[in-house]
Length: 439
Image 1 (tube, rainbow, N blue to C red):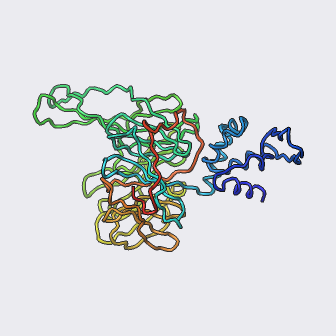
Image 2: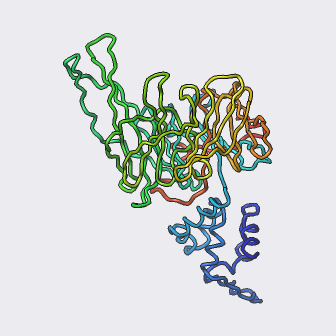
Image 3: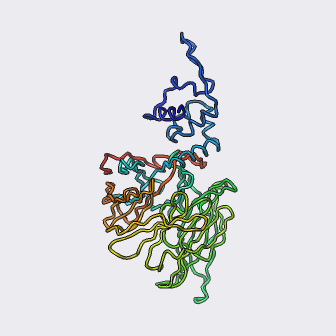
């Protein structure tokens, strides 16, 4: 009861009254000029840290200045792990909606309230000057970290939105191989390099965060007026510990399609891939183990049905690999959610005949499913009541509304050897103007 009371009181209005809670501080001394000495009551340091580990990252960041002991304790792996797992147990999800500004055509995020009774209103909009004139994709989250990567440029960053730490990744130094065309009997010119189908995760064996991305090299015959493109593929792996990229062997299959929000689960990244020709497609799952740095192929179960007739979006649901399956055509759309555990797929639920819905965006708290409709507005399907409602997020002002995506992360104190957000260079946070979410 004492623990719950202290945590609740400490976080009210984000305030902290040092004299009243002085018994939590190590070696706190009363004012020598005080005429009356208050009775001294101390808690064991382990219990104090247990209490503090249940507080939000925002509060802990403010408490860094209370004393050096607290500041150093908040940076220990044990405390960081306890704080993260407390957030995980309480399902303290934070939601970011990736959007494109209708005036500037720049990518930005809307941070949503994480309470259903608030109808997931926009709390603040987050702009990324570092990616000005770019369209970065979001990969993660892993332990509260997000990876931002522009597929058209060698430009990437790791970001902790809770501690506001920002890590710019170095450009790749990997050599691009030449391409010899046996038909044209000449070496072709490298015309374009694309970075796509990335994933971000954690290697528990080496205590390292890694980014993997597929690189597409486009070669052309520069002497031809309308050259035919030739393609070659590479795979690059970034290590936060070494702060460098390396090339790893390319698998026989290349990822296709997109995932919903996150494609990393317990040390393994997943992508949808396929084999076969049109009307004879066979869906597969390509996986990559962050620990042994090896690719594997898994079958997509037979529940999918005829592959060209269904969309299959991989995602993470309650800490497990899942798949949302829905038909490619039809006025009314139904959705099946399947989740795998130890290789066995089970259906979690089915949503039948939702009119006007184009595609799913991802899940929030308690299985709430976010969807995009034919008007590019964001809808919420309440899993507990089976009701569908429109969220007042005003996406009609957006550009490229079909690229709206949802990303969920847990607060975390994980450090990435980066720098604090710079308003002019990296991240700009702007509170939403009012409850109507206009910006």
